[in-house]
Image (tube, rainbow over all chains, first blue to last red; front, side, top):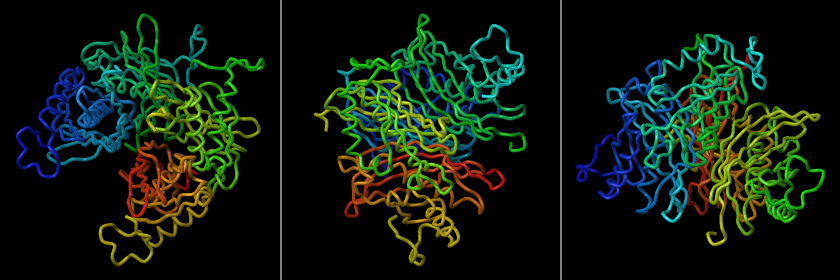
Length: 159
Length: 159
Length: 159
Length: 159
């Protein structure tokens, strides 16, 4: 679950590997997102229908008590889900978040949080993803937020 | 919305004024939130049961197309709702977001976005707020996101 | 909300009137819905972008405490929102609920509940509605549930 | 997952069994809910933190196309989640739904639908459940709706 990825083809057993084209497409899109860099988020894993993000703890993304701010937690969860959907889309399409709902289950503490977006249902127009965020400290992961997201595929002619 | 604004100023007609104590309490809490400063958000209005935020456009909070990132839009909406609930809470309590749901209705463009949190129902334990985000350009406001949020009041003995 | 109500009656002051064709289209759809008749719900008002339902109290839709069951409250809210969106769709299209979120704000008591669906944003593909449910007793209305709903327009060629 | 239950103690391996007291408490509560009987729903499995419902197809719960109505799908999902939370509560407490969000992923068809409520996080005051609804036909299950729900525990002194 915490694989960094590019050189892991051989011992990847349970999940399909994303194609190099898909990885490139997502990394290129990610690099244009000012907010993710500003927060300090990075993509840690890309597989078809599932994308993981990590966001390290630092004062710029936390609250007064040292917890991650709900806004930061949500932002990386939303992005992880968006790219999870995007892995399933054909080339030359775009993804937009229609809506999401997130429950903040526990104070988000840890050295970093890990956001996992997983496609539950991929349709021609709409895709629904599950969003999970874990606080990670000393290798222990605790679920701190859980959500559900609806995304729309935008085709070039519709832009 | 049993407001506490006993010292409401004369020229405030449609909305009650927040008390100086309430304003101070919210500004002090806001100042401890690293994320809001990091994004560049500021509080623009505090009335009992309603709080407004503004977030100016800049590359650090936008996407590749110049729209505000959904994560930034959500973060200020969540914070506006949290403080709207907080205006109705007694002293020495805290507010936590239980969950929220937000629809991204239109590309969030503008010189800044304005997030408005409004308490719909304030209970002893739970408060429900409406969240609205407007894109503002040249004095014209357009609704770009709409949501609903549940918050919990945390009393000192429960911390 | 580009209304179609050319034949608005004189005594309708604040809201545009729905056209007879729109009213007929919605009533015909409603009559085919087994669940609404089974619950005892009826449509009480149809205007462009807004539809009201009433559901009278009786043991079949309530809980042990005499409150309306959350499932019944949600069912009429969802239907009111669905038809509110439908009023804005062209002929020969259909409406499907993509998702909704509802907060149950207070015990739903009253002689009947009134559900109001209101379109917030109508797009080519997706429409977002606000859902409100009021408990009504002796002419007094109290907000008992509030929600937000996403709907999709299905065109004949896509069925 | 499709166990009917009462005589299955011996070969129940993966899940804890609910105590007879818990089963009795939930069945007694269920029997007082007019709506569930009116819809034709029944509880099919009770384990700690997870409750399954079945709702057979019939015109009273379906739409014009023979699909289950979203309102019926939501009602059994909400109830399954409510009782899943309730299995984790101490005696002499009650459960109320605070809010839920549900995505209708596919037309809900089948001989019956099966709703599964699963507690994700159980707290002193609030519990969060995952909601899943499957269409079941000839032993094949297909996910037709997915949601997330927040519930509150009400203690006797607070009623």
